[in-house]
Length: 295
Image 1 (cartoon, one colour):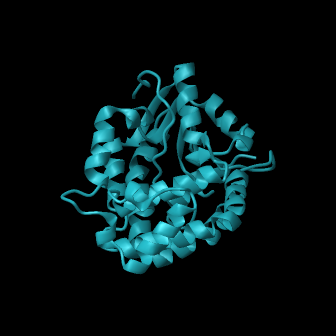
Image 2 (cartoon, rainbow, N blue to C red):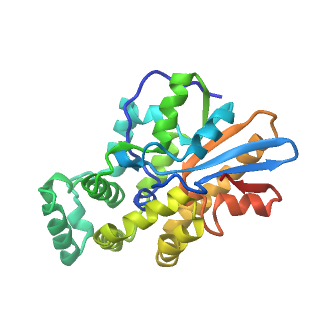
Image 3 (cartoon, rainbow, N blue to C red):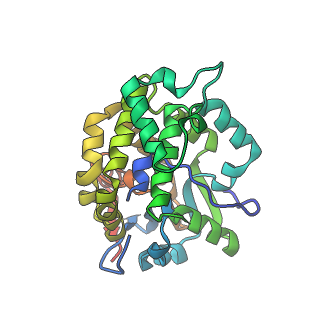
């Protein structure tokens, strides 16, 4: 297992920008589950990678799971995301080279829509033209989310920092490089459609943000899947598979290893990895584990 290395500043790197579009009353349930088989237990916590100040304090179930756990498990090594090596890798994988720009991969109509959207925030298209669609999609969503008041670190960064202060051990499923390689392929071969879809989703965000955040806070995975993920799965099945299903399947053996140990782990990953028939919760139930949502 790993110990956190030094201090770090919170950063954003989501598995997909819609994962961020998911707050809270201290009510009956939350996006925290206890998974067990025999005497062994782990906790699963659904995260949002960026939050607003009013989203704190988090639902009490997160702290219950944290206090009961010996080890925290994240999607990736959050401290490494600010290293010079990772910044350089991001530039290499997620920006155009040899004089190419985003305009080369977009229709004139989509390019003009992009310019209009950026102008709302006082940003020129020349400032982002070197970004590949995957990087640009993340950047556009971050602009919109920050404009909507989501300016605080998310659940995962909150607990990564807390584990550092409390000297709790941490582990993760993917290296930053593995996660970056997944993200860099988003929209590959369908660049124009990917940017158009991103812009359309961001236009509807003011109406969908609060219901989606409420679904996260209340742990309502059916609402979350029906309100956003089902359409996404149908419209972009390959992206859905690469970002969610395949990664969930890759994580499952390690989760089963944790469930075979006497110590208690708290696994914190994006909430969209929990929801739906392809989610981690459904996969664990299919394998015979008992899954109980904390109240």
